[in-house]
Length: 98
Image 1 (tube, rainbow, N blue to C red):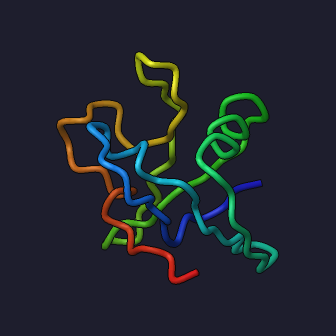
Image 2 (cartoon, rainbow, N blue to C red; image 1 turned 180 degrees about the horizontal axis):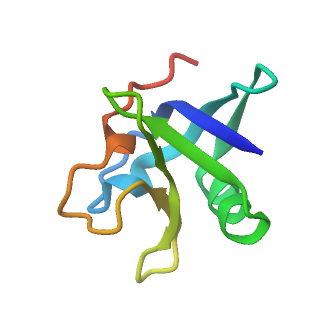
């Protein structure tokens, strides 16, 4: 199953790693038209351990798949780029309204 991430929900804390500010992801399975909300740790584990696929769509319609990552402190997160010096489309998504 693949899901498209459509928005992110961030907490109000101060994070040196912007990915850790993301609490939840809102997604849609476009194939069966089902929406859901998943927290950061759950989506990390789903991608890493269950071969799940999650992606964002860029301005040209290209899919950019999320990859699992872990910070030195052991916090799980996901991102769309291997090199964090490049702009990550995940961080550019709008905030979720709920």
